[in-house]
Amino acid sequence: MTTSEKAAQRRALLEAELERYVKQLREEYDPERILLFGSLASGNVEEWSDIDLVIIKETKSRFLERIREVMQLLRPQVGVDVLVYTPDEFARLVNERTFVRQEILAKGKVLYERRE
Image 1 (cartoon, rainbow, N blue to C red):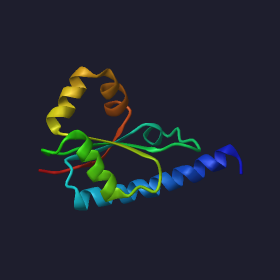
Image 2: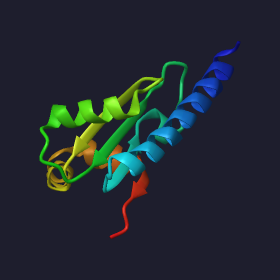
Image 3: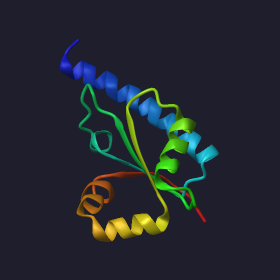
Image 4: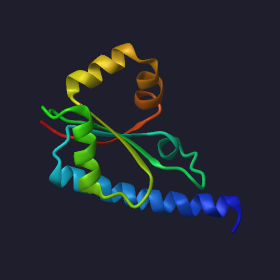
């Protein structure tokens, strides 16, 4: 199998898992927003690419506890990096961190946004 065929196969696997994640998060985790960033969002998927997600949710749970909750819910079948922020935390990061503005907001994709 060529490198491009492996990348195409990986993209299909990641997209199928991502669809499952978004459905499950919407139904069972009640996020305000789900953002995709990284190689899958930019279309630069390679053989070892993973899924990079930011989830925004109002919660009192500690940062690492939130990630644990999401990972237990999703039970990932592929590599996934998940960051879970409250709306206030994410707003602060947007103001303070160039990476958040340039990579997550500018290049990322909104996969879900709750309608109030």
